[in-house]
Length: 171
Image 1 (cartoon, rainbow, N blue to C red):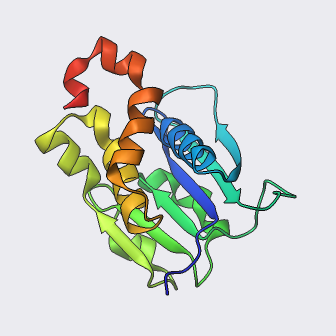
Image 2 (cartoon, helix red, strand yellow; image 1 turned 45 degrees about the vertical axis):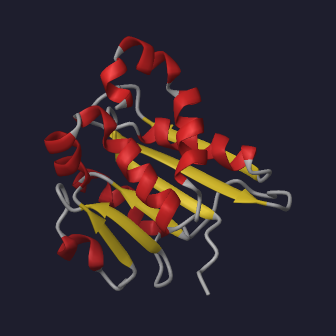
């Protein structure tokens, strides 16, 4: 049986779309009739500084939006590792961008890791701008069992202004 995922931590650098991923995921979970808390955490600079999002969802009321340990962590940059460390325990599932982070740095005492060369895939096949969408797709399918069509519907809605400015991102 698949482990229940309710507490998700997304971490990377400003400019990678961490907060966009969190908004899309939160809206998706709301549309699936979950109660959702989303707490963004980032500095005043828009690019290059740590960006973190805490998401928690449940069919029940969420009493406290912060949590001590995450069920799932997505980390996209090496600089964000210090931000996620306190939220990892032996049962935390971790998705990381193997284009930017070495498995040795992420492994620690946890063997529940899934690596994806997200930056490499985005740059070689699409555009760096879709890095977050690639990771969101992997996370939704692998860990949350969310159909691609449902996720894409929310992405189109949430990113409609970006798609209008740059239609090539939608391909």
